[in-house]
Image (cartoon, rainbow over all chains, first blue to last red; front, side, top):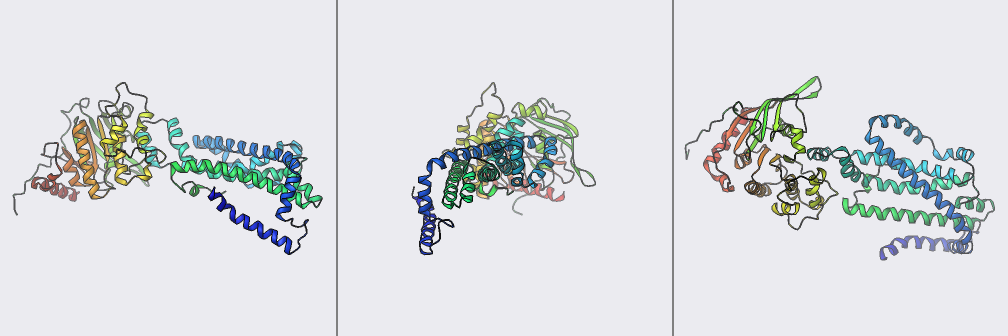
Amino acid sequence: MLALLKKAMPIALFCAIWEAACVVLKIPNYLIPSPHRVLEKIVESWPLLYAHSLTSVAEILLGFVLASVCALVCAIAMVHSKRIEAVLEPFLVVSQVIPKVALAPLFIIWFGHGVLPKIIIAMMIAFFPVLVNAVVGLRSVDAEIIELMDSIAANRRQLFWRVRLPNSLPYIFPALKVAALLSIVGAMVGEFVGSDRGLGYLMIIGDVNLDTDLLFAALVVVTAFGMVVYAIIEAFERRIESRYGKGESQQHLVTV
Amino acid sequence: MAHNVRRFPLATPSAPAAADPLKAAISLAGVDLSFPGEGGAVKVLSSIDLHVEKQEFISIVGRSGCGKSTLLRVIAGLLTPAVGDIAVMGTSAAEARLYRSFGIVFQSNVMLPWLTAIQNVRLPLEVVPKASIPPRYSPEELLKMVGLEGQENKFPRQLSGGMRQRVAIARALSFDPPILLMDEPFAAVDALIRQKLHVLLMDICARTQRTVVFITHDVYEAVLLSDRVLIMSDRPGTIVADVKVPFARPRHPSLRSDPVYVDLCSQILERLMQE
């Protein structure tokens, strides 16, 4: 609890300075609303924010989970078979080079204004970091460990479950954190481009009506949600760390 | 000169004509092994004949890179030679692995870092389906035997190099194999701990009657521990001398100050220098 308080201190300080700046410099609400004004807005339009955040949360979580599952399956297939790797690799390179955010309008044309195109965009953005890290984690087993498993007559399946998979966990968890945050970006972009629901939609509404309070309120809600997801994955990561040694997982993130 | 220097017969290895490969613990005949290299294959092992009786402790000494570790991997079936016959407990090397005929201790005390000491010792038992005859010692008993009581639930990173090597020995013994293959197991630990591990290994061998093939470049260690010391030459590796160590087992580390021991060691060293 105390640690949490310590972590929150700089943010509290920042909010205090922000509040003071708004009052002293008389910054108008439509430019930068003060923190207490944003808080008031969240409270007074909570039903609205809540209803729209349900849509966004569903898009983000579905995008994130689908991306992670697909990335893990692809990684396992690629590590398992050279042929699958050879077939998938060019697609993966191309799909990484394409700015996925720029595909958002296309998905809106194809799949309409519902949640589906947002899920797809979130998924496409979140997919790659998990894939790359999972492939590296599954592959980078010490040759000596493989020889050891060989010497005790372990078969391929045992090598996978007992060595490759546990070896990949410190690589996968930091990637999942990145993927969770990227799927938020994906869902928001999708909602900006074309939607009638979601926190991204509220931000656009706030923008066109010069209702900056609403924009900030939606921003705070989506940020809070992102922090919760991040904290949950980090808790899992800490459990992994207790097995693997501290700081082990941080070293392993392959940046994309 | 305080005493007469005894000369020991450094016999060239006898042809295993009389030896029955089915009765021996390990029997290699005419084994050749090459690795692919730049500009053609490089011959690493050349016409190796090796015959190890059951419950015999043999050491193979040679300079770094002479192929002694490779030879151990051939015995373990991790490398398959192009030419030659191998029998381990009367079966092929690959079968011997499945029949749990041997345990290996590697030089680097390799371990799964996410498993505790006791889980690492149990690993070989979990990989191969249960044997009809259960091993004589449980993983807990083995860790106790190597002096790691109370360290069962520590992770490898929490153990010192010497302790990890003991876990590796316990792991190699987990399914109670008749043969123990050791690849320079004590090269990475300091001299004091190495002496302790020598005593431990001699104690384990006395208690559990195992055949041991011990790879080392330390002649003193080889003579202290073994019934026979085989000297290997460089590139391609081949066994050039077979020395019987004239001390009964079990031995005591104080053997190191025995003049016969000292003479034998210097003679083997001399022979190694010629290679």
